[in-house]
Image 1 (cartoon, rainbow, N blue to C red):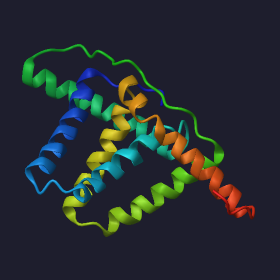
Image 2: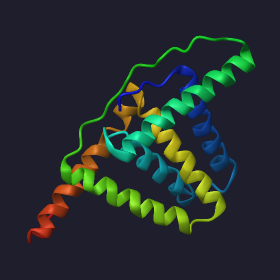
Image 3: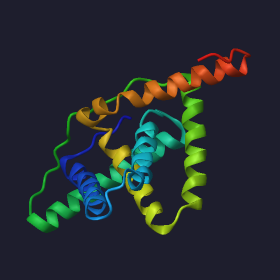
Image 4: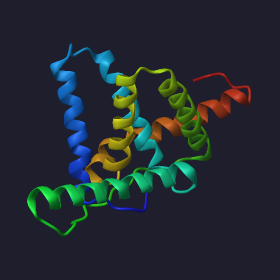
Length: 168
């Protein structure tokens, strides 16, 4: 992704992350209740790998929107101004097969989102926002380095399977 996250935008994304973690902590603390949020984070982080196209544009626009909301919120709440960008991060690049797997994952995620209840929809969309925005930073991008590897491996396996080689 070719846009940077500001500290104010990072504050907004981190707030969404903390509020989601707090909701889980105050609830029943079941791992299955984290799945919509974690799936959203993985989906959002995968969109940052798409340097062009619709998914890449959504990732850039979400990051820029989060920056603007954060700068406004920090300015109104504290009176401080002057956005400071965070260290820009990037994950590995996608292969063509990996890009196909991102598209498949996005379609499946959209179907799951449509079938989900109101609370899970909020969790999924919050996860997507956090994944898209925080992956613009060096620290979170390095933490999520396994995501492009997962998609690229899945794309290679799918290509191999469709070519008649069904081994893992």
